[in-house]
Length: 433
Image (spheres, rainbow, N blue to C red):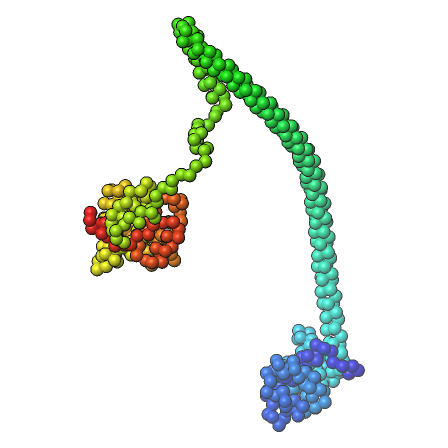
């Protein structure tokens, strides 16, 4: 051969050599191929292609062993090649590879012809494939051009729509500016109208004041006439009495009309109220303590509850644990509220009973007596804090009595203006009935 093996023939020879390598004993495998003897045939043909091709070319014995295997596998092809002809129906690459391995007469010509034919067929196939790829690319280019045209048309349509929308927004903006200008003008007219109305109201007020002065003058004249008529009445009252009555009726009608027109408020003070003097101090709930005989005398509680609008605030559990400590909490509440209901009915005073509800997990169900307000402190708040809030909510000067033996509660409500009394005082008063 004048040149190297064609690529297709070389690949077929390497594949036959790789398959033959598995059938040879180790001592017949060329040294350069022994590292690849354990590989699978396909992997060996891919990774050891160059060593296999070199061994076939340079090692005559190895090539002869491969040729023997070809004769066994393809006897008809080997016979035809020995006769100097190539079967027309055989694979050209198999014919060229067998001719290269068997080396019959004229084998180099056969290999070169088949290599050239395979190269031409591959070139034709590649040319056809390139033409097909060119057609496909041309179709893609045509599709892209059509798509670009469609996109450009769509963009032109959207641009035209955007221009129309911008024009509509501009018209709306001009309209909004015109409406704002009209609204500003309307506001100015309203301000002018308001100023005119205020001027008219001021003028009407001045006229009303002038009319009031005129009526006062008429009233003074009427009073003078009345005084004159009284003087004349002492001499003869018949005609004068009639005239005076007529004048008084006229003055009464005029005065009533003036009162309606001026809408004067009712009198809240008298002239004597404007005279400065020293007034006596009214007795309060704190002053009544000076008359008590004992610190827990229930008579003192009666005096305090007899004060106008008195409000009795009871520290519930402080009282019940002092008087009914052996009972359960529900029994303590029931007994105290029953006594407070009777006290409210006797005295008519406002009564509020406060219990500690900071540790309650659910609402307490109980029947509240008439005239008694029952409150529980909120979560995180003690009954003492709720009592102090109730005292601070009352107006200064109202009679507020707080029943508790807790020194801190007593001092706190005393500073807030309430009158503290011990729990034993209320218990003695409830026991008295």
